[in-house]
Length: 338
Image 1 (cartoon, rainbow, N blue to C red):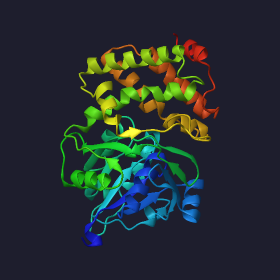
Image 2: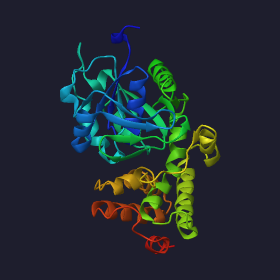
Image 3: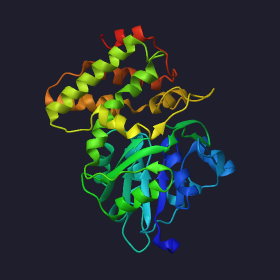
Image 4: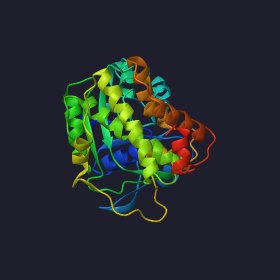
């Protein structure tokens, strides 16, 4: 197929998720541009993307990288893959939606945008600015702790990326995206209702905040905090009438597909929220995880004190750049009223 007929994937946010998706697509022969900023942008430009996976070890990928939309001429074959943290979504959408596309129109009018993000609000926000929005339920353990370096430690697949149109359905872009991902080291199911999977993942992502805040998230006291937050989420989603994948469904996605070896020295000790604190990012996605449960609880008259406390505490810790694991399990439990 001629190059001009193949998609070009513009990955906005080349951290753990975006770097892994973009890097693996690039090395399987697809056209990819990474979008990054700061020290990460400088490292990618100077030295390339250092991507580590179990099947191929560490390699350097010279993926094209830019700072923002002004550096690109968009065409109708471009697909935007939004992989920034949810708290940065609005700014990214504002940067890209009104950019002109060759032949007329804007990105918001003519290009598909894929939300490769945690939470369930990003697709709704994107649909205000983009006519075509694709949801992606991301189950992809990955690490980004140093500029220019990304690691995805699972095998035999790097991740399970369930895709579908938002709010529901599929189309040719979804089918092509799934095929390209499947040929690049991912399992990529196509779902008629992608939000069914994303709401289920939202519940499991409540563990991110506990893991980030607590020095011993595996301790029984910390597990009780997470169980209380999860119980609130289930009550809220039931009250809202929102169907979602259960824990067993999500476990089935991983079993035999995402096998993770024992962590190596220096590897991240937690997921995306933990890594945000470890990097001193200054913000965290709790508003779109625990905060989503709080919002739905207020809309439907269901109390959510544990999630509200976790949301507030995570934001304070991130803003003050305290780092991950600064609370004992007992301190965390006391802080959320358990």
